[in-house]
Image (cartoon, rainbow, N blue to C red; front, side, top):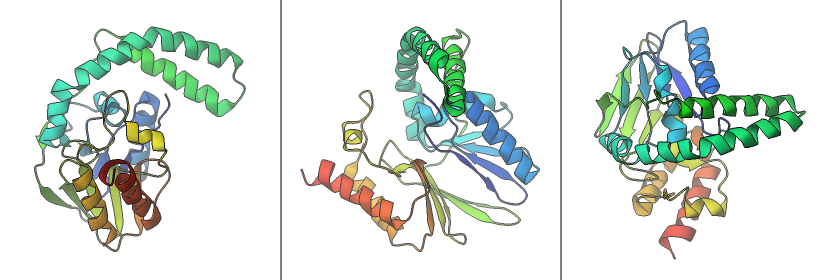
Length: 249
C-alpha cells in the first residue's frame, strides 16, 4: 500500500493549513509533526482535494475541533461511494495482512520493511469495527482566498475533472499550485482504465480545460497528487494523455 499519494502543508504565517492526508497513518502523523515542527503552530484547517481514499484516509487523525474543508461533490462521494470502498478494503484486509506479513519476513531493505510495517497498521486499522472515516465540515462551491500574515493562498473548486468538484490550491506570488489528482508525475497508460471501477477522468473536457488554463499562468512548481514535483512539461503530458485516451478517441 504505502504512502503513494502526496499531501502537504501551507505556512501562511499566523496559520497552518494541511492539504490532503495519506493512506498510511504513520505518514499522516509525520505530516502533522513536520507541519508543527516547521511552523511552530498546530494546523488550523485541513483541505480534502477530492474523495479518493488515499487522500482522505488520515482525516481521522485530526481533532474534531479542527475543521475539514472540501467541495459538496466530495461530501456526496463520502456519503455514497466511500462506504463501498471501505468495505472492499475490509474484505481484502485479512488476505493483505497475511501476504504483507510473509513479505516482511523475507524483506531486507530497511525502507521496504518500514513500508510493510505501515501497511500492517493500516489494514489493522481498517479491520477495527469502530473505525470510521471523518467527513468534511466546510464546503467550497467556487473559490476563496485565505490571507495569512506572511502569504496568501487561493483555494479553488475547479468542478468535475479527475473527480467531482476537485479543489486545488494556488499561490500566485510564490508561483506554486497544488493540483491534487489533476496531475500525476508519471502517467502509465493503465491509469486510463481507472482504479477499481473509479474513473480516471469524470469530465475529460473540463479536466483538459483546467490544465490548459493553469498552464498559461506563470507557475514555477506544480505539486501533483502522485509523484515528484512537476513543471509545465508534465502538465502538457497530462493534456496529451487526456486527448489520447478520452477526447480524440
